[in-house]
Image 1: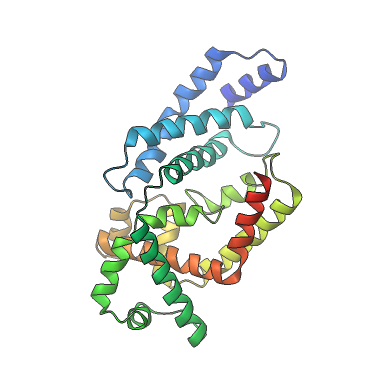
Image 2 (image 1 turned 180 degrees about the vertical axis):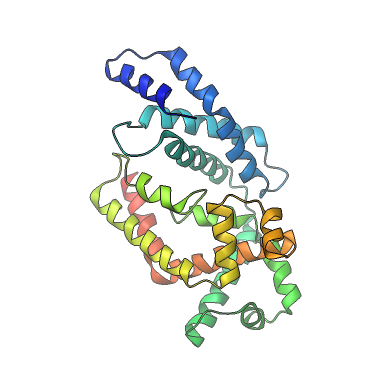
Length: 266
């Protein structure tokens, strides 16, 4: 995929000569990207969530990207489109409120346990420490993580920065839109700085899972082969990493600040 077609379309748009046929060609060119992102999200969702709904939301995100992309900025359209497509799909999921309340409560339960242990001990909590805190055997605690795995998809995106992303591409894309005011940009930079710091503090395997999944775009099975563990174990490590990050971000207060900033801009 190259940017020649989108640049030509945007050039015509500036001249107020919108070519709908060109726009349709761009949509067709990037349709496989929409499908790829939707399928990657769908594999982590319950069976009751329809892939067609995700694809429709993704196309809306793609059209939004076409309308808002600024070729004069130093961002490739594919990178910008990925951000908009994924954001649109996640907005659709939040609108459907597909996560059961019981699952949210379980995730909060784990997050609070992580916070308590780490504040008490002053260091990164092990799985054994957290399991002991919630009065569970290790196997039982890992089963609980499996139950929370779907919520981890939205949880990372709730930070407003770390998603399919390529954290490195979002660093340049997120501030690019004209809709962000200076205060919001400052909050997002604080958030990303904190998130980067907290990722560095994760246990090695959890950090590696995030890197392979979000940066190298390996699937869970492929990550399992790299780490020589089962796909289920990779899922547990991923969920635990996400819940740790949420716990740390909530504890620092920066996540609530970012949400307040986004709400103020709506």
